[in-house]
Length: 404
Image 1 (cartoon, helix red, strand yellow):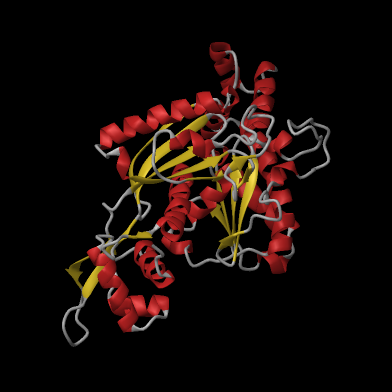
Image 2: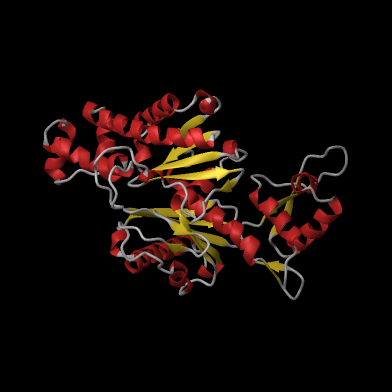
């Protein structure tokens, strides 16, 4: 049976709130009358989707009952897949993490092999948390590449052979009786970051992911901007006038010179030439250099690696400056595995943006590291899923109550 739109509005307001709400506060948030709020709240309480166990401060009369979302109404399985690792979590419907874990993974193994490994990790988390798989109300998954969000199908990407148009939702439907939502993980990171209290009211901002790939999630007036083909924000393939061949087939892409793989490749060459004492020793032991080795060398203040990261950050910031001039955001948050290098990268990105953008575009601009770090992806995947399942999957039972 059809659920009234007003009911969804009231439930979403309660679910999104960081604290329990009184009916008066719900009236202010939703713009509905007190009688309307009361009617729908009572039905949501009978449906056990909302609880009213707390008493608020009196403003002169009786203490108001405070309403909160029932966090035991269900859970979300959230997955943040990168090209070399995956972060899997189980979150409640308010998008608070119950349990999560990361594991190394190789997306080039293909979707079946990778999804089987993720499934194994997810079921381990369910066992450890003692959460019944039937209580999973939705699955959210971020991928390290373009996704046609309206269909949930990945687009072709050379680093992900076999993933093009692969029906990920069909894989999960074998194990869970719930909807599955798939998106580019720079968009899920953007959504996750937007849950942070200090920026949740900022409507125009950019989340810049710097990992093996480089991409931007763009929020316009509180909504993700996806573009005509749902692939907006691919700044890693902006041409910056060099001759390096990118995996996309073009030459001169930002990602081919400043992405994680490119940095590790250049660092390994530096180590082979003996220019970095630290990485020269690492190369002897391991036989190769990874981005984690570069992070270690930067933390140890290796001057050659510090300079390499400064150059990479300035190149990234130079491209970002064009986006700042065009879009004029209030905030840029920078995350991703390479961004974990820290202040050296952040400072050089800032330098390039402020140097190459118009002063009027940067007058009120804040550029900072991600608040959520490696948790942004799974929290954002859960936010995406929770919003969708309440909007699309909330049903009315024969008894007149509601169920997810």
